Image (cartoon, rainbow, N blue to C red; front, side, top):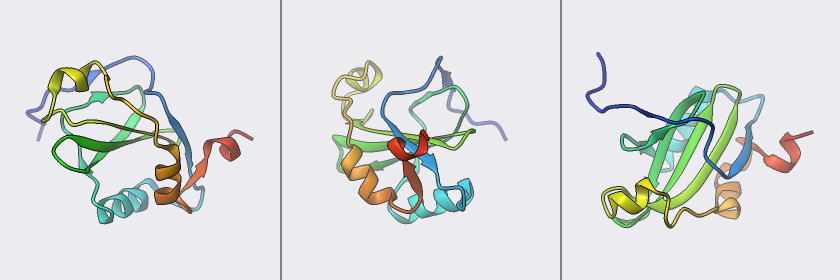
Length: 119
């Protein structure tokens, strides 16, 4: 069954590389872990090139954490306004923030941090 939500594709990938999925972990296991931590499907989002999964965790009505997983195992994430709170600011990425420390604490053991995954 096809989604009734239109897919909004864009070139390239979002900012804020977190790292790569640990080689002993699968994307499926990682998604289950994220869901157990309160992340869920993010229907209103751009779709980056080679993106497999896009999940968000709302903090409240105003803010959310957003994680994307890519076909090559790369993981990227950011903090932003929810589209429900302010659709235009969300769309143009106003309030789009890096939260590397918070993501690294959450993803420890799941994602090799960018500095270590580059080499």
